[in-house]
Image 1 (cartoon, rainbow, N blue to C red):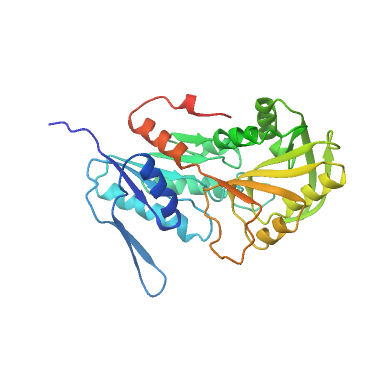
Image 2 (cartoon, rainbow, N blue to C red):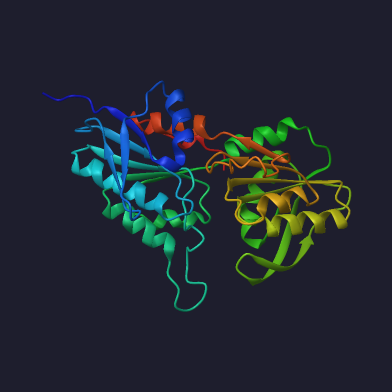
Length: 316
């Protein structure tokens, strides 16, 4: 006798808080799972309830360390071996996305490798948010639901009622995203051009477009060390910007990021909760505003489970 496939929602350790909020939005309890850790650092996730015949959603952002990615892979493998009907990796932040091409000789294409590993682990689908490059979706041989954080960022920016607003891209690569935001907000675009000395080190930044007398919002997919962001904000302020804010989906915030933001000309940094902020109370978070993506993810999970169309949920 045919039974309807059950929806089961599980969380890996790095995204537990995010997953709890998604489950709350779906009126579900998180599935019971555990991780056994050996003394040498090896670990073994396990499900503490049956997933046989279920559509299993496993929530985990794959920011460093690599353990976060590998835990997701092991959970997917465990679900497949426990006879789950479908395994869907819900990755609010897709790590290794910056390695989307060979930008110099003899380097890996990390994003493609991660896609291959997810497929090998038994995933049938991936849900993620604001990939570093849209074309990463083509690295997968199964469906990818690419969610845009603009659905929560744009209404927030609009609610601020900022006069003389301009949207800025932190580099040439971000021009498409900045254009989409500017079109929705009906305001001009400023493009920042940067040159790098090496990874995570910016040599110089110049801005193209009308800056003087504008309240500028820089939009990006992630903030890592905040070096580019802080430098761009200071340059824009020196060029006559009235105020500078930033809006970035993934708060990677490595190294001196919190300190750089606190000491920069930035008035506010708006991020999502795809990556949890550092819990250290010594980190200065006064300029940081966190908007949740959990309701958006819950909505897409519900629609995918019920085989409903999802395109109307996106603002690109």
